[in-house]
Amino acid sequence: MIQPRILLALLVSTLAFLCATPTFAQSKPNDDFQLVKVADGVYAAIAKPGGLASGNAGFVIGNDSVLVFDTFFTPAAIELIGEIQSLTKLPIKFAVNSHYHLDHTGGNQALVARGIPIIAHDNVMKWQTTKNKRFLPAPEELQKRKADAATQLSETPEDQKEKRAQLERQIRRLDAMMQIKLTNPTKTFSSGTMKLKLGKREVILATLPGHTGGDVLAYVPDANVVFMGDLGWSKTLPNLVDATVNDWIPTLDTILKDHPTSKFIPGHGNVAEASDIRDFRNYLDDLRARVKQGIVSGLTIDQAKQQLTLPEKYKGFAFQNFATPNVEDVYKELKGTKQVQ
Ligand SMILES: [Zn+2]
Image 1 (cartoon, rainbow, N blue to C red):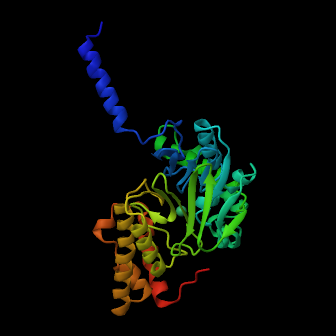
Image 2: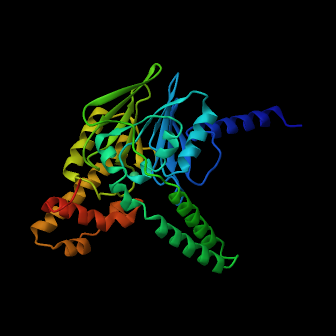
């Protein structure tokens, strides 16, 4: 028989544990994303490395319907729909694409197949099935990569568990990529804001320049949460392939001025505070200053890529492989030789 005092202590410690970890939603564990409750009825789906999500997504449950923000890679979008349905019986009324990149739109087909309208910037309609091809190798190439990985797996001994698991993940990812049908949004806009109603709850979409020239963010006023898409990266080096950093820095200043106390769901990285978004803004500003200085001192693009190494304070960021391409992209932007759009 347990002493009442011990029972009480147990109860208190269990409660303390539960209260200390309130942000993780009750979801089945999966390899692709982790569901995080950010506010009442507002969830982030944070991509796990090596899984099928690749980019973050999320959703907002109103009092008569649900909005989905971004669609991962397919079929992970179907897993997200499953998570929503395990939390609520309300229908999904809207989906939003933050921008065209495949890690945020690869699951569009799963939403469209369910008759759910997808809202995005006008440019997503232009780029979704064209520019996205650079992120999606041809089916023959995917087949070849899968066959190569399968051969490697068959040659990897059973006791090399980590290598086998990595190859299995790779095969699973290639299978998922083979299922992707580049699918357009269904309703677009290119300026101002768009207000969506989920019953009493409102979600405000707005478009701002910097990351691709076709980005939309979503603000949930009653929860004080901003879904940033790839306008915001948390402790992660960004992909600047389509970026205009000279537009992006003022965009981030505007967001930080308008939302000083919000929670932010970034396109990559964990749920963030304003300070994380400010760190990201400062990364872009530091990068631009370093490259500008390099150009002034006469560095060629190759010298800049070699010499302008990542400052120590950003060494802990994810996606370190973007450090050198970031220098190249900003160099081209500042020289006026970058091909965007
Ligand atoms: Zn992304």
